Image 1 (cartoon, rainbow, N blue to C red):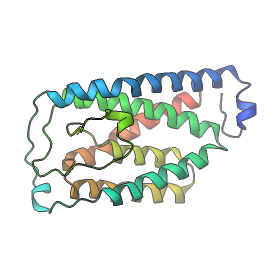
Image 2: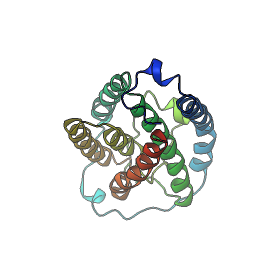
Image 3: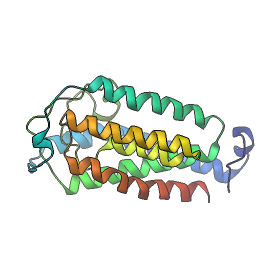
Image 4: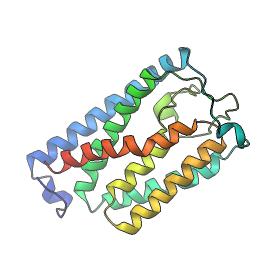
Length: 206
C-alpha cells in the first residue's frame, strides 16, 4: 500500500498500515529498552585504539551545544513534516529500526576504544539510549551523523534534502572536533544510512 497522499485518518483504515506502524513502534520500544544493557556490555569490554591521522591533527573542543543546535531543531522539523505524510512516518520508523540494529551489529563486530583525547558529549537525551552511564565505545558508525542523513533521505523536497545533508556534514565535523568519533565512523555513516533508508522505504511502499 502506498500511503503517500493519504491522511492519517484514511491510512489508519488500511490493515497493512496499522500493522507496519504498530509493529514498528513495538520493535522500536524493545530496542530502546535493550539499549542500556547492550551498551553497558559494550562499554565494559576491551577494544582497539585507532591511529587516526586526521583526528591527531585537529584540536579538541567541547562543541556539545553546537551539535545539538544542529541535530535537534532538524529532528523537530522532521516531526512537523510527519504530521501530513504517513509514508514518511513508516519510512523513517523502519529506517531508524534498521539503523539501530545495524549499529548494534557493527559496534559488536568492531570493538574500539574511544580516542584518547575524547571530550564527553553532554547530551540530555542520552539517558533514553544509554541509561545513566557514560558510554564512549558506541563508535562505528556515528549514530548522530547517520540519524541526520536518514532524515534527509526520507524527506522528498530537494531543498530539504540539501539542508539536512549539509547539516549532517557540519554535525560530523563537530563530532570530530569533540573527538567523540574517529574519522572513519563519520565517513561510513552515510553509506550505512542509505541501506537502512532503502529498507525502510521498501516497507513503507509494500
